[in-house]
Image (cartoon, rainbow, N blue to C red; front, side, top):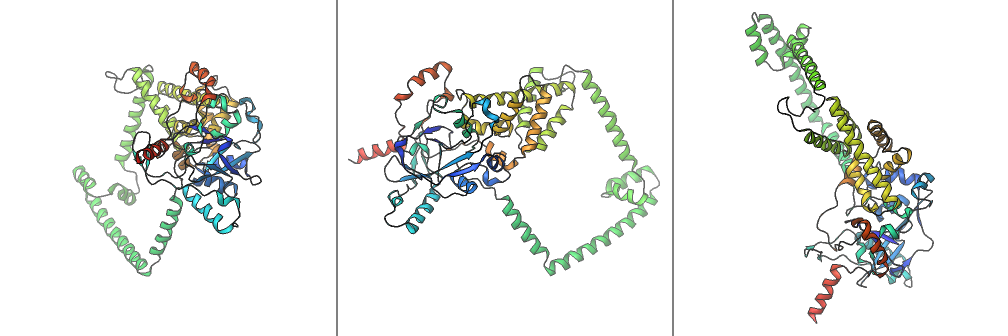
Length: 491
């Protein structure tokens, strides 16, 4: 079986000898359509990241499904297994022939959930129950990382703590169905729950309570009466000044000194203000001159003036950065609006911008397809986050675009239109997209040593590593080595 590290995205293989207990009848199972609607195209923030607690919530099953041995022998790690059933046959061309995926992925429970499960076992099971022989591990309050630093406890146990666990050669030890299951799961080192909805309800209730107070209502009514009285007096005063303005100088001083005078004058006179019309005409004239100058200089994007413009390669680089920023915006409407607003500057800007956006979309689609088919150069455990960082969408959306269209043969403008149409149809919560796109960095306890994986190797190195895969030794975490040195020192 396999377990994904939530921090560095490395996939670990869990040998059968490391499984101390597994439930033979209970099975966490979710239908493919339910998984796509609730998790992949999540509309609720509680389904942003896949973890054991979310699996229990979406499947409605009890935990744990599997119990694993800890490398220290001082306790056990509880984990959950989830099967996604009734997968459609649309992905056969990528090698996904299984109708059920994810049955080989283990999701460890958080340390807090470990305590809850053990409390239920102690209270509800008989004394001769086999589950009482598997007490859970406790988090270390101070742990040593690979760079020699100390860090606090993690949210949940990491795969490197399982006895006999070792890093997986994705290209040779996983099937297309396994890689497909990895692509469908975005992970993080924390339990994500956006409290905006709850805070908004609290603010609304508090505001409603304050506004309904009798004293506040009387005060608001008094303020409204005073405001209407001042408006009537100001309007009468401005009307008298307007009628007494005999020359242009006095009118200019009047407009300059009286607040919001243009709006009030329109109310008094019932006519549009001449200065406003003049400003609108000037803007229209300037816009026509500017657009004409852009179209004549069709070889240069208007960054700078005609005598001091940026070089074209720099301009193209700026537009590529703009394209990357636009596509990574989690707000679909705002992203599409910015794209077409920038493309309206001139024809050259439109061409370069759409080329950059089309290339970024097609490259990411091809990388997603490659990691699903072979997994030799692109780790699917990391691609599950990369697509959100680059294009703010799920890998499934890109697989569907690549399956229905030849991304290299499609015009850039048509590819962009397909991309935004798919994003609008998926309608994933923008808070979820933004959370999945965040880099999972920071000092981590029990940090796994960076392994030689297929994602880090060239084509020549992959063949050599595949021949030596059977000679690999289980990974020994830094914390275990630190404990051994400490025991030796005490002796």
